[in-house]
Image (tube, rainbow, N blue to C red):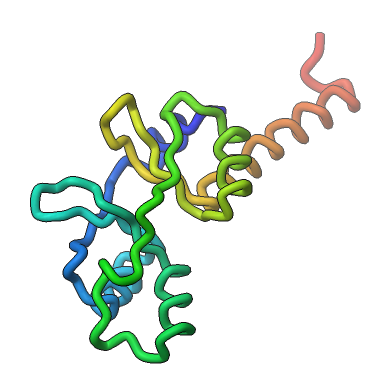
Length: 145
């Protein structure tokens, strides 16, 4: 299965925040939208980084309080990307090797969406269920003439 299949099913909505936004405001956005990742875009809508729940927790552990901390202070600037035609296995390996839970999906030079570890697991489980059903049918002789 390909990452484009995941995006076709879940949509390609991209949520972004500003480098000047407060970390507190981003945490509220994450809670409201039930997400854990956002792109960081400047006033020209150029992507300059990303921010995740993990970034927020690490900043909290380092600083104690985050009331006066901006996204620019904690964002990740080395964004992990994949191509829309990459397989789920390729993206899973990319996430593992980069120790990340989110990958920005590119279609050429255009942003196509975000793939999360939850998306990968959901679709991997769906494939396993189909494979299991097919194996069960094969073993029991169902579905054959």
